[in-house]
Image (cartoon, rainbow, N blue to C red; front, side, top):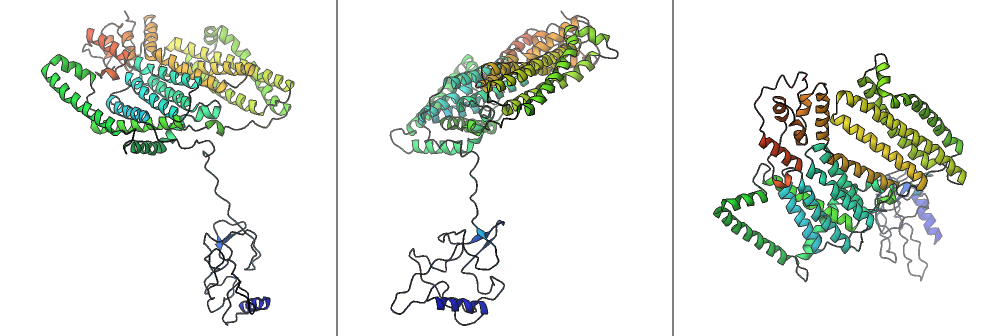
Length: 608
């Protein structure tokens, strides 16, 4: 049996053209059945290479495998093995086993290895299993959200944002209950905080606090859906509903298809009932509106005008957008992504000298700066006026931004130091608290110095949106430093959520304070004291500034109020500030004065 095989191999090497025997099949002895042929090895990959495979069997006879010609005659078909796979199966067959230790038949001295499997997606470890199709209550809440989005979102943001949030939250509640999730008290608090932030567009007309409040409300809502507690969860939670849109649409389609296929919870009767109700309301509402003008005016103020400037295609787009958002929120509530699982582990502790020496030197630098700034904090105006060639503008603008960046970088240094600081014994903990606590206290003095610089600047030149915003930002960073100090004493478990809660409170307070109104009042008070008035800047404020600018004498009043737009929007898109400004301008209309010179020249005090 072995002689036949060796002879076959010898003829292959010498190029003998005699008819070859089937490779790998030994000669049977007389009286014995033919043994089953062994399967050829699967395609393997050379070690150290990628994307290159070589077949060990079944190669074409006109392609040399080792640099020499193969047998001229084709090999006879081999007998199938026990599994029914032919012995000369092609090298890419999925039925042939992979053997990373297969011998090198080509004689090239290379070892062949199996390609490694592709790594799993990064979110597979934190993403929950797909939930069951949504129930009837979730689908109805999504449909209501889509309808209200198409009707109410085409004319601006005011109370309509709060109205849309209610069915959105209801759909998330129903989906979570169906999936067996019970909301925690923290999630309920985050949800309530998000709804409270939507009071800003109801109160204020300014676009920048409104946008900030809506984004903050979306962040708190995402945190309520996920229930995260770590920094990774707090920062990545807003991505959850965005990444779930595609899966949520398929999820909602499956639920709607199941509910319309008949059965105990068929959605068909409800849809037919809603359609009949809409037809009846449209028909009889149109008849009553034609019969009485007062009723027509009331109906017109309550029902959105779908044929207005926004157009039907825009309304349909908003409806589709609202439906996608509602399904994404509900899907996230039913199967949230566990973003906390993506957080980095604790850092490798360093030696005391390695981490403490840089921070101690940084503390000394901060202490030297604080010592120099003590005079400014106590006698700010005198120091600035006594300095040769130093103005309020140069002193405040050139120093405030550097101190703001220094505060942000200090927070980054503290976060890194907490990860690498040793935590093995009480002495290490005491050293960490002493060094980082000193740095936090000195950072608070830096924050106070920056705020003092901007206070001097605003006292001389008045308030603007940029100046007010950066001061509010600096004050919030000071609050974050205080929270870090508290975390060093009581533990850092609640620090991520405490920082987020402080940001939400700051945004809410900033929006309800009506920044444009504060800016107008501050500039008018400074103008009353004899300082110049930038009427062009005040004319670019929102309707929040109308009550303050109404105090100006003519023609300044009309020139300042002429450029402030108070649109005649529907009730659901009109803020309280817009309604108040509309009443003022209706009682005292703007006069037609020439304002070109007034908007460019310095204006003397003229405030009632």
